Length: 166
Image 1 (cartoon, rainbow, N blue to C red):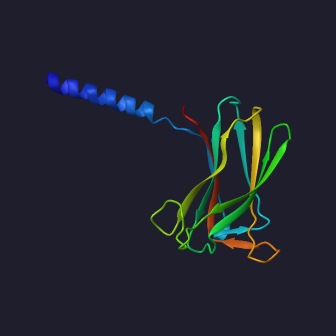
Image 2: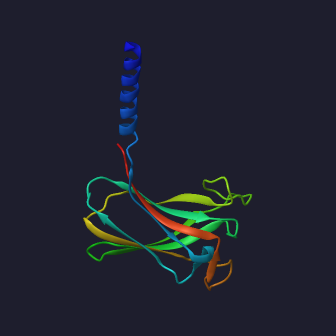
Image 3: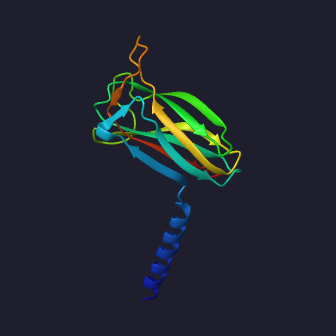
């Protein structure tokens, strides 16, 4: 009987330490679902988030869920990050979405793939307050000036902000 009590206690202590070691590093995680799995060229996806910690660095990711209707091996997006003091940073980013054989990158066993793409690495926010990130697609066909009006195969776009554990 005493052995059973010791085993239960060891199991409880082990479970407790497991829970402590698996702390959630995510500070913000939000997705926007695109109607009909199509990202329109004039469609800005906006994420509002609050920053309280201006000391510790964070990793920011743009998350893309795509399916087999996505016809391209890469993705161009334009991001606009607006700070609480109205400072604005605009970036044009390119991400690889498929390998050289045309196989989609990302995780997932079905036809839907999820890509967790670095947006800002080890970012320290200079001021606390409310930030707004706007994301829009900037895809064009080779040799063409006009954007692709309806980028098919993009199901969801998300933003994740993670604490960096030291």
